[in-house]
Amino acid sequence: MPTPRVLIASGSAGHGHEMAAQAVQEALADRHPGIETRRIDALEWMGSAYKHVYRRGYTRLVDRHPLLWRALYDATDRRSSALGHALTALMGGGLVREVARWQPDLVLCTHFLAPELMARALRRGRLKAQLQVVITDHDAHRVWYYPEVRRYYVASELVRARLVLRFGTPERDVQVTGIPVRRAFRQPADVLGVCTRFGLDPDRPMVLFLSGGFAAGPMARAIVDLWRERADVQVVAVCGRNVRLRRRISRLPRPAGAVLRALGFVKEVRDLMAASTLVVGKSGGSSMAESLAVGRPLVVSTAIPGQEERNAEALVEAGAGVRASTPEEIRWRVAGLLEDGEALRAMTERARRFGRPQAALEIADGVAASLPGATAWRGPHFHGAASA
Image (cartoon, rainbow, N blue to C red; front, side, top):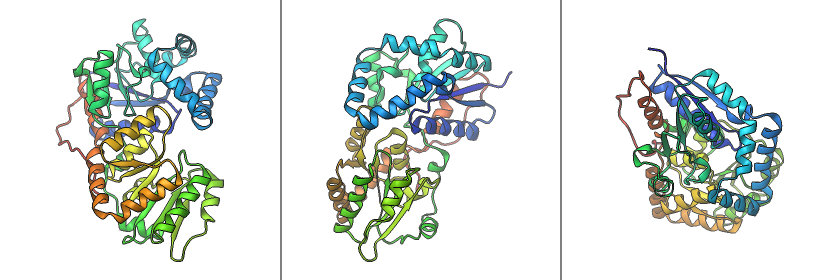
């Protein structure tokens, strides 16, 4: 029997879709090494002009025109755009040809661009493969739905209900797994080692600020204001590739004894999350799932209208985090939780329960079970956050 093939199609408009694809590919390699996998970025096959406009347009809308993005998000959720679909179909021929050339048995999509094209190719007989989808937010927007999708992997029972009740997706075709996170987030961290590496005191509270969606001014004010309440708080600010932000944060005035680590792009996000008391950042599907996977509550500092607002709603409803959209609110929320140890412990426990670090493994098992000739995983399943 030939080796089963799985093609994992992500999209590089937003970091989370690619991280989800990587997580599932890792899980398939760990659990089902007999399956051949390939991961592609759908946008890379769409032509340079389309790719440029798609990526830049999305970034510009969510960063500079969030109200316009909300209107577009809501409009396309009510009704598909015929013009947009026609343009995507016109530019997507290269992607369809490449997928058909590789001849996968199953195409798993972690971004909504690929299923739009794959569903069309299936209807026209240009592709013979199962089509499955991982929804990477706590929402079921219309762009994810196509009747040709054989199975959905979703974040929660609420997302499952939306697919079933709104679009008529059969319940058996929707599996609640959580949002997949990479292998590292399933493994325990050496917290003492992390503290030693970054010069932190494991006996003092540490708040991790993630810069995504954070303007320099608000992040700086939130940190300085927090020290006015709790000078003992250690702050680690991950600024990514924003050199100006890192420079500004590193120069902040601080009270005597205060600890501040302003970092650029780091690979140790899991370690820093595990060593933190609270995480402050945006409610992107994957970044939120990563924080919860290590059992750390999230203070949502910003949310892109639409999908990230739904993520924040789900987080708050689960009691695994809070929203704080201004520096003053961040100061109040973080200081309040640090003062109320019982409330913080309860929120941390709820974060552990809401997090699903094994999501990628469950998805990998679901994919394998859908393939003829693939060996089913016989090991135990575990739900909840990994210990850290």
